[in-house]
Length: 458
Image 1 (spheres, rainbow, N blue to C red):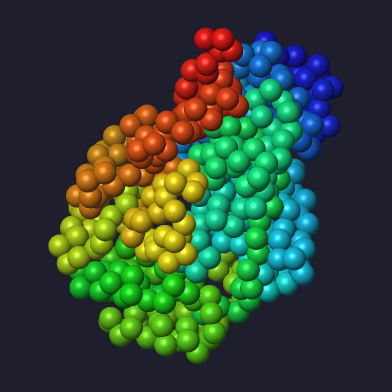
Image 2: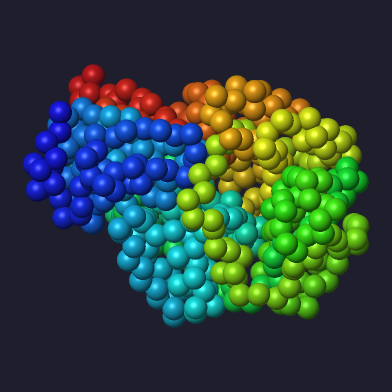
């Protein structure tokens, strides 16, 4: 049993117990339907607080959860009966405009970081949601609006400061602890608590971007993906095939009908961007076209406060989306009984694919498309029905050995985690885990169990 006053005396940051009036809000994560009651939540103030939190977890044996933005699909940012280290108060950002780098604490969100660097016409690519914490998305890989032009988030990670399981704050980069640097670039939170990242910044000021809505016919879906794969790598797209929500700028007759809602981002000259986007507009008469020149940070619009969707998701890599696959997507979406069924398609390639597969723990470098089946629904007890739907659609789209993206895995078991780390990647991660976290203190994650370490003289 934890004595809250004694625990609070150990930390600089606030300590929240179950009798605190802010406890219910503090224990919430982004995913709806996650109802876990931690023994204590610590809003850590700095790396020293993180080390104290790890010591508390070792002393008590309680399960440890580490939260940056709390967007884990599996709800890993909160523990039932355990200890939560919440990084949200660690938000310092140091931007070196001339050197094109930034040091960022991991309590920052992608939107906050992007707005601050965008004021200088600079950016690092993250995902497609501004409220995501930079800690979790970076450790997972980071597939976003700049993936084809500038690679994954981890391809722009220059260094990190990490508190390891024994409480030591270490720096890691290509020359210092290179094994740890390799592992944290895609290996998730298995190896320590990342407290600061140093990122490379790129000149990304005005882009040609925004949402484009098209009718979701099989020809439009397959044609869109073909055009996205053939487009200049300055263009990254995230396509959502889904029922049209009742947005004021969409004609009423399209509400509830399947549409292609494509988020476009051309990171290059405006005239070139307009030419690159013309083939997409020619696929069909747009239902709504909001694509145009804009500051890059505006791709992250304000998000609905208090939005906690209950959802099932299954993600796989696919080689392409031909007419047959597009037919399958349309048929499956029409058959979904969820409040909102979505198929998301992220065309990859470009800068991401030029990084060798073994250079980081993100090994799916040659995969052309990341496909996700998503079902959003109201009641957690409906989960089995919608889990079957997302698994069925993903199975119809995937290729043999298709793999998974660790940042989008829910509570799906070790087999799916292994799918994120094919071949020797898993064994290499397990060996590094054995060196840095032999007791698996960091286990509330998409876990890679530590390989047994060889004892001296053995």
